[in-house]
Image (cartoon, rainbow, N blue to C red):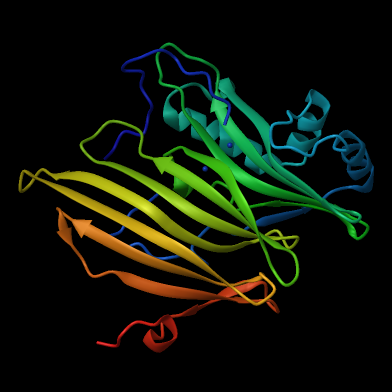
Length: 297
């Protein structure tokens, strides 16, 4: 069994404060296999305080002040906070060394609505015996006249343990109603053992609905060793993504073409079109060769 503990083996201690992989021979988009999103109703009193504190926050470079970050952390259910300690303990340090924080990815105002894209982060205090590690999960805070809601996007689950993950905001894509927020999520394996893997996922979140609408593996790499055959194996998959828009420039579909190599042997590529359904605010998968401009076999 792989040892998931993160040991310090070289280099300086990296101070990080970032809150979370699997790999197949063929990389396919995932719309249902992720953890269910958690939607939290923000109390009116807290919403009013957050609204005042977030008035000046309109750039990703803007740091959240201590009061704002504390209010955002207090919105997390107790079970989520406990999981941060569990994760840190799995990496090796004591759970008491866990540190939770939040950082701003994007803030967007439109009329009386404010959408704040966040990253909740789980890390541990610098420790000379362990390499620094972190795990990060995105969340969307939507404030409007209809109320304030915080949605934790595919929150960390114990079965995800223990490969760390970081999140970046890439861009916003206009929809007929609302926006689609594109994120990049990087993961890589940690711990001892002959196998290693990394994954970069593209994730699209519907705003203001707040749920994950689509997830596509952009690049995955796997290096493994079979002790029985004493052979090494390598698998690499890359996906090229393009966007389809209507005459007004609104997004209508995302097309992903994935190509993989296994032990440097090229495998047939796979092209899938994901059509946006505004009524359900989700994507509908279409693999019809004629629709994709691909010759049928």
